[in-house]
Length: 144
Image (cartoon, rainbow, N blue to C red; front, side, top):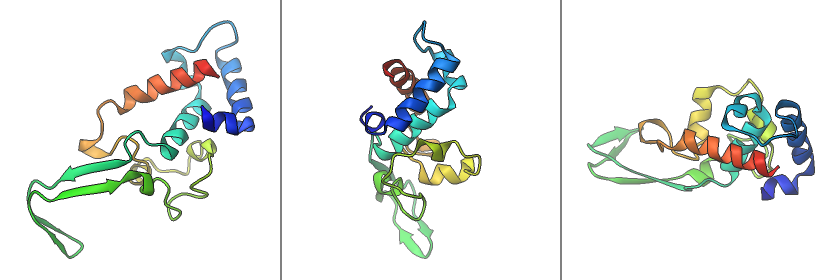
């Protein structure tokens, strides 16, 4: 909400989308979210800038070699998701709140999976990630 308040143009566009899709006579419901792409983009951008778990921890079950580096069994790897989602090589203006970056069709889902990690990724990703997108989207929409 702080990012939305600090960006009045985002707030105005979000209000217009909600008023056109839902109307002003009722609150947003879970079934309205597919009709609100800008709200979904605002939620994704908020989670990119402020991830719920900035560090992801993984443990190797067996030894392996990655790009010439030998990794022993039971090695713990800590991934700084906060840094990955603010990497200037992956994101244009990484410190700016720009929900529009999630609206462009040029972003490939597979490519996005390697640089957008608010809930982890792959088999070890948070199983509640989709549910949280729904709850956060509904809550932000109601507050707007």
